[in-house]
Image 1 (cartoon, helix red, strand yellow):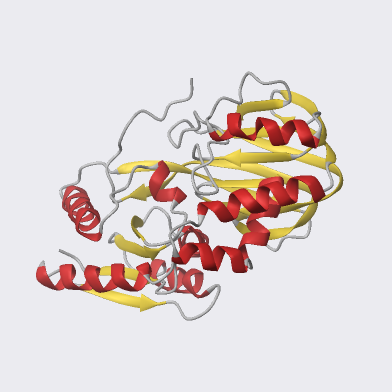
Image 2: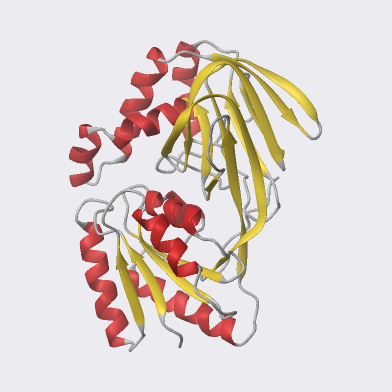
Length: 325
Protein backbone atom coordinates (compact mmCIF):
# COMPACT_ATOMS: atom_id res chain seq x y z
CA UNK A 1 0.00 0.00 0.00
CA UNK A 2 1.30 3.47 -0.92
CA UNK A 3 2.49 5.74 1.90
CA UNK A 4 -0.38 7.67 3.51
CA UNK A 5 0.04 11.36 4.30
CA UNK A 6 -1.55 12.39 7.61
CA UNK A 7 -2.18 15.92 8.86
CA UNK A 8 -2.62 15.90 12.63
CA UNK A 9 -4.06 18.61 14.85
CA UNK A 10 -3.17 17.43 18.34
CA UNK A 11 -5.04 20.35 19.85
CA UNK A 12 -8.50 19.62 18.38
CA UNK A 13 -11.07 18.75 21.05
CA UNK A 14 -10.05 18.54 24.68
CA UNK A 15 -7.37 15.93 25.21
CA UNK A 16 -9.29 13.56 22.96
CA UNK A 17 -7.16 14.56 19.97
CA UNK A 18 -4.00 13.40 21.71
CA UNK A 19 -5.59 10.08 22.71
CA UNK A 20 -7.00 9.49 19.22
CA UNK A 21 -3.66 10.21 17.55
CA UNK A 22 -1.79 7.87 19.94
CA UNK A 23 -4.29 5.10 19.22
CA UNK A 24 -4.09 5.79 15.48
CA UNK A 25 -0.28 5.52 15.51
CA UNK A 26 -0.44 2.18 17.33
CA UNK A 27 -2.93 0.85 14.79
CA UNK A 28 -0.86 2.07 11.82
CA UNK A 29 2.24 0.33 13.17
CA UNK A 30 0.29 -2.79 14.01
CA UNK A 31 -1.17 -2.96 10.50
CA UNK A 32 2.33 -2.19 9.07
CA UNK A 33 0.92 0.75 7.11
CA UNK A 34 3.51 3.19 5.76
CA UNK A 35 2.65 6.76 6.66
CA UNK A 36 4.11 10.23 7.09
CA UNK A 37 2.67 12.45 9.83
CA UNK A 38 2.58 16.24 9.60
CA UNK A 39 1.78 18.02 12.87
CA UNK A 40 0.05 21.41 12.75
CA UNK A 41 1.80 24.11 14.76
CA UNK A 42 -0.31 27.23 14.22
CA UNK A 43 -3.56 28.48 12.71
CA UNK A 44 -3.44 28.07 8.92
CA UNK A 45 -0.63 25.51 9.04
CA UNK A 46 -2.92 22.64 7.98
CA UNK A 47 -3.73 24.49 4.75
CA UNK A 48 -0.03 24.98 3.98
CA UNK A 49 0.70 21.32 4.68
CA UNK A 50 -2.17 20.22 2.42
CA UNK A 51 -0.88 22.48 -0.35
CA UNK A 52 2.61 20.98 -0.13
CA UNK A 53 1.31 17.40 -0.01
CA UNK A 54 -1.13 17.78 -2.92
CA UNK A 55 1.51 19.41 -5.15
CA UNK A 56 3.63 16.26 -5.28
CA UNK A 57 4.71 15.60 -8.86
CA UNK A 58 3.33 12.66 -10.80
CA UNK A 59 -0.05 11.21 -11.66
CA UNK A 60 -0.32 8.80 -8.73
CA UNK A 61 -3.15 9.38 -6.23
CA UNK A 62 -2.31 11.13 -2.97
CA UNK A 63 -3.89 9.48 0.08
CA UNK A 64 -4.43 12.29 2.57
CA UNK A 65 -5.92 11.79 6.04
CA UNK A 66 -6.89 14.39 8.62
CA UNK A 67 -6.77 13.64 12.33
CA UNK A 68 -8.63 16.64 13.71
CA UNK A 69 -11.92 18.51 13.93
CA UNK A 70 -14.08 20.50 11.53
CA UNK A 71 -11.75 23.50 11.59
CA UNK A 72 -8.75 21.41 10.56
CA UNK A 73 -10.77 19.68 7.85
CA UNK A 74 -11.78 23.08 6.46
CA UNK A 75 -8.17 24.29 6.44
CA UNK A 76 -7.04 21.17 4.59
CA UNK A 77 -9.81 21.46 2.00
CA UNK A 78 -8.69 25.03 1.34
CA UNK A 79 -5.07 23.96 0.98
CA UNK A 80 -5.60 21.16 -1.56
CA UNK A 81 -4.41 22.25 -5.00
CA UNK A 82 -5.38 19.16 -7.03
CA UNK A 83 -8.70 17.59 -6.05
CA UNK A 84 -8.52 15.06 -8.90
CA UNK A 85 -5.37 13.57 -7.40
CA UNK A 86 -6.26 13.64 -3.70
CA UNK A 87 -8.19 10.89 -1.91
CA UNK A 88 -9.43 12.26 1.41
CA UNK A 89 -10.06 10.50 4.71
CA UNK A 90 -10.95 11.67 8.23
CA UNK A 91 -10.31 10.38 11.73
CA UNK A 92 -12.39 12.88 13.75
CA UNK A 93 -11.21 14.30 17.08
CA UNK A 94 -12.94 17.69 17.49
CA UNK A 95 -15.80 18.71 19.78
CA UNK A 96 -18.32 19.31 16.97
CA UNK A 97 -17.45 16.78 14.25
CA UNK A 98 -20.29 17.93 12.00
CA UNK A 99 -18.46 16.75 8.87
CA UNK A 100 -18.10 13.20 10.16
CA UNK A 101 -21.53 13.07 11.80
CA UNK A 102 -23.34 14.26 8.66
CA UNK A 103 -21.54 11.72 6.47
CA UNK A 104 -21.93 8.97 9.10
CA UNK A 105 -18.17 8.37 9.20
CA UNK A 106 -16.78 5.83 11.68
CA UNK A 107 -16.32 7.21 15.19
CA UNK A 108 -13.25 5.26 16.33
CA UNK A 109 -9.72 5.19 14.87
CA UNK A 110 -9.92 1.42 14.38
CA UNK A 111 -13.18 1.58 12.41
CA UNK A 112 -11.94 4.62 10.48
CA UNK A 113 -8.66 3.00 9.42
CA UNK A 114 -10.42 -0.22 8.45
CA UNK A 115 -12.75 1.71 6.12
CA UNK A 116 -9.98 3.97 4.80
CA UNK A 117 -7.68 1.03 3.98
CA UNK A 118 -10.54 -0.82 2.26
CA UNK A 119 -11.20 2.25 0.10
CA UNK A 120 -7.50 2.61 -0.78
CA UNK A 121 -7.42 -1.01 -1.97
CA UNK A 122 -10.63 -0.35 -3.89
CA UNK A 123 -9.05 2.69 -5.56
CA UNK A 124 -5.91 0.75 -6.48
CA UNK A 125 -8.10 -1.88 -8.16
CA UNK A 126 -9.55 0.89 -10.31
CA UNK A 127 -12.97 0.84 -8.63
CA UNK A 128 -14.87 4.10 -8.15
CA UNK A 129 -14.78 5.85 -4.79
CA UNK A 130 -17.48 7.93 -3.11
CA UNK A 131 -17.31 11.45 -4.54
CA UNK A 132 -19.05 14.39 -2.88
CA UNK A 133 -19.93 18.02 -3.55
CA UNK A 134 -18.23 20.88 -1.74
CA UNK A 135 -19.35 24.48 -1.37
CA UNK A 136 -17.52 27.70 -2.16
CA UNK A 137 -18.10 31.18 -0.75
CA UNK A 138 -16.74 34.51 -1.97
CA UNK A 139 -17.37 38.05 -0.75
CA UNK A 140 -16.32 41.59 -1.55
CA UNK A 141 -12.68 42.12 -0.71
CA UNK A 142 -11.75 38.45 -0.29
CA UNK A 143 -8.37 37.42 -1.71
CA UNK A 144 -9.72 34.09 -2.94
CA UNK A 145 -12.97 32.12 -2.50
CA UNK A 146 -13.17 29.82 0.50
CA UNK A 147 -14.21 26.19 0.22
CA UNK A 148 -16.51 24.60 2.79
CA UNK A 149 -17.54 21.02 3.41
CA UNK A 150 -20.42 21.58 5.84
CA UNK A 151 -21.86 25.08 5.53
CA UNK A 152 -21.28 28.78 5.14
CA UNK A 153 -23.67 31.32 6.57
CA UNK A 154 -24.57 34.86 7.53
CA UNK A 155 -26.14 36.28 10.65
CA UNK A 156 -27.00 34.39 13.81
CA UNK A 157 -25.18 31.10 13.12
CA UNK A 158 -22.07 32.95 11.92
CA UNK A 159 -22.12 35.27 14.94
CA UNK A 160 -22.38 32.28 17.28
CA UNK A 161 -19.47 30.56 15.50
CA UNK A 162 -17.35 33.71 15.79
CA UNK A 163 -18.04 34.01 19.53
CA UNK A 164 -17.49 30.28 20.12
CA UNK A 165 -13.97 30.44 18.69
CA UNK A 166 -12.88 32.61 21.63
CA UNK A 167 -15.37 31.42 24.25
CA UNK A 168 -14.04 30.45 27.67
CA UNK A 169 -17.39 28.78 28.29
CA UNK A 170 -16.74 26.41 25.37
CA UNK A 171 -13.32 25.49 26.74
CA UNK A 172 -14.79 24.69 30.14
CA UNK A 173 -17.81 22.75 28.83
CA UNK A 174 -15.66 20.77 26.37
CA UNK A 175 -13.77 19.32 29.32
CA UNK A 176 -17.04 17.78 30.49
CA UNK A 177 -18.09 16.81 26.93
CA UNK A 178 -20.86 19.44 27.03
CA UNK A 179 -19.63 21.55 24.11
CA UNK A 180 -23.10 21.70 22.53
CA UNK A 181 -24.33 23.80 25.46
CA UNK A 182 -21.88 26.50 24.36
CA UNK A 183 -23.73 26.95 21.09
CA UNK A 184 -27.11 26.96 22.84
CA UNK A 185 -26.05 29.63 25.34
CA UNK A 186 -24.37 31.80 22.69
CA UNK A 187 -27.35 31.43 20.34
CA UNK A 188 -29.80 32.75 22.94
CA UNK A 189 -27.46 35.59 23.91
CA UNK A 190 -26.69 36.58 20.30
CA UNK A 191 -30.29 36.37 19.08
CA UNK A 192 -31.45 39.21 21.31
CA UNK A 193 -28.42 41.46 20.81
CA UNK A 194 -27.71 41.08 17.07
CA UNK A 195 -28.90 43.42 14.32
CA UNK A 196 -30.93 41.99 11.47
CA UNK A 197 -30.50 43.00 7.82
CA UNK A 198 -32.66 43.13 4.72
CA UNK A 199 -31.30 40.80 2.06
CA UNK A 200 -31.93 40.30 -1.65
CA UNK A 201 -31.24 36.76 -2.83
CA UNK A 202 -30.44 36.12 -6.49
CA UNK A 203 -30.36 32.66 -8.12
CA UNK A 204 -30.38 31.36 -11.69
CA UNK A 205 -34.17 30.94 -11.32
CA UNK A 206 -34.87 34.48 -10.12
CA UNK A 207 -34.71 36.35 -6.84
CA UNK A 208 -36.51 36.91 -3.57
CA UNK A 209 -36.29 39.13 -0.49
CA UNK A 210 -35.45 38.15 3.08
CA UNK A 211 -36.71 41.09 5.21
CA UNK A 212 -35.15 41.51 8.66
CA UNK A 213 -33.01 38.44 8.04
CA UNK A 214 -31.80 36.70 11.19
CA UNK A 215 -29.71 34.08 9.41
CA UNK A 216 -29.07 32.53 6.01
CA UNK A 217 -27.02 29.33 5.91
CA UNK A 218 -25.81 27.74 2.68
CA UNK A 219 -25.74 24.04 3.54
CA UNK A 220 -23.73 21.38 1.73
CA UNK A 221 -24.59 18.90 4.49
CA UNK A 222 -27.80 18.85 6.57
CA UNK A 223 -26.51 20.01 9.97
CA UNK A 224 -24.01 22.42 11.53
CA UNK A 225 -23.16 23.79 14.99
CA UNK A 226 -22.92 20.43 16.72
CA UNK A 227 -25.83 18.82 14.88
CA UNK A 228 -28.46 21.54 14.25
CA UNK A 229 -30.32 20.53 11.04
CA UNK A 230 -30.47 23.87 9.20
CA UNK A 231 -31.43 22.05 5.97
CA UNK A 232 -32.53 18.51 6.91
CA UNK A 233 -32.57 17.21 3.32
CA UNK A 234 -29.32 18.76 2.06
CA UNK A 235 -27.27 16.32 0.00
CA UNK A 236 -23.63 16.11 -1.12
CA UNK A 237 -24.68 14.13 -4.19
CA UNK A 238 -27.01 16.44 -6.15
CA UNK A 239 -24.90 19.42 -7.23
CA UNK A 240 -27.01 21.83 -5.15
CA UNK A 241 -26.67 23.89 -2.00
CA UNK A 242 -29.59 24.37 0.39
CA UNK A 243 -30.09 27.92 1.70
CA UNK A 244 -31.88 27.76 5.04
CA UNK A 245 -33.01 31.13 6.39
CA UNK A 246 -35.10 32.88 9.02
CA UNK A 247 -36.51 36.32 8.25
CA UNK A 248 -39.52 38.58 8.71
CA UNK A 249 -40.29 37.37 12.22
CA UNK A 250 -39.65 38.93 15.62
CA UNK A 251 -36.64 37.79 17.62
CA UNK A 252 -38.83 36.65 20.50
CA UNK A 253 -40.80 34.47 18.07
CA UNK A 254 -37.58 33.04 16.72
CA UNK A 255 -36.52 32.17 20.26
CA UNK A 256 -39.67 30.09 20.81
CA UNK A 257 -39.29 28.49 17.37
CA UNK A 258 -35.69 27.35 17.92
CA UNK A 259 -36.83 23.94 19.23
CA UNK A 260 -38.55 23.33 15.87
CA UNK A 261 -35.27 24.15 14.12
CA UNK A 262 -33.32 21.76 16.33
CA UNK A 263 -35.96 19.07 15.69
CA UNK A 264 -35.78 19.64 11.89
CA UNK A 265 -39.45 20.76 11.82
CA UNK A 266 -38.90 24.32 10.56
CA UNK A 267 -39.84 23.88 6.91
CA UNK A 268 -43.56 24.57 7.34
CA UNK A 269 -43.22 27.43 9.84
CA UNK A 270 -43.80 30.99 8.67
CA UNK A 271 -40.51 32.90 8.42
CA UNK A 272 -38.31 29.86 7.84
CA UNK A 273 -37.40 28.96 4.25
CA UNK A 274 -35.17 26.40 2.55
CA UNK A 275 -34.30 26.74 -1.15
CA UNK A 276 -32.14 24.40 -3.23
CA UNK A 277 -29.99 25.91 -6.00
CA UNK A 278 -26.58 25.56 -7.66
CA UNK A 279 -25.71 28.96 -6.24
CA UNK A 280 -26.97 31.99 -4.33
CA UNK A 281 -25.92 35.64 -4.37
CA UNK A 282 -26.98 37.79 -1.40
CA UNK A 283 -26.96 41.58 -1.19
CA UNK A 284 -27.50 43.05 2.30
CA UNK A 285 -28.35 46.58 3.39
CA UNK A 286 -25.94 46.36 6.35
CA UNK A 287 -22.94 44.15 7.21
CA UNK A 288 -23.39 40.74 8.80
CA UNK A 289 -20.88 38.20 10.07
CA UNK A 290 -19.95 35.45 7.57
CA UNK A 291 -18.50 32.03 8.44
CA UNK A 292 -17.34 28.96 6.52
CA UNK A 293 -17.45 25.66 8.43
CA UNK A 294 -17.55 27.62 11.67
CA UNK A 295 -14.48 29.70 10.83
CA UNK A 296 -14.93 33.48 10.74
CA UNK A 297 -14.48 35.01 7.27
CA UNK A 298 -15.51 38.69 7.43
CA UNK A 299 -18.35 41.13 8.04
CA UNK A 300 -19.96 41.49 4.61
CA UNK A 301 -22.78 43.07 2.60
CA UNK A 302 -22.29 41.03 -0.59
CA UNK A 303 -21.66 37.31 -0.69
CA UNK A 304 -21.95 34.47 -3.18
CA UNK A 305 -22.30 30.76 -2.46
CA UNK A 306 -21.92 28.08 -5.12
CA UNK A 307 -21.77 24.31 -5.28
CA UNK A 308 -18.63 22.55 -6.54
CA UNK A 309 -20.17 19.37 -7.88
CA UNK A 310 -18.42 16.03 -7.23
CA UNK A 311 -15.29 17.86 -6.08
CA UNK A 312 -13.86 15.55 -3.41
CA UNK A 313 -12.91 11.85 -3.52
CA UNK A 314 -13.57 10.28 -0.11
CA UNK A 315 -11.79 7.31 1.45
CA UNK A 316 -15.09 6.41 3.10
CA UNK A 317 -18.15 4.47 2.04
CA UNK A 318 -21.46 6.15 1.23
CA UNK A 319 -24.00 5.52 3.98
CA UNK A 320 -27.72 6.24 3.89
CA UNK A 321 -29.89 8.22 1.50
CA UNK A 322 -28.97 11.89 1.42
CA UNK A 323 -31.18 12.94 -1.48
CA UNK A 324 -33.37 16.02 -1.08
CA UNK A 325 -37.09 15.52 -0.80
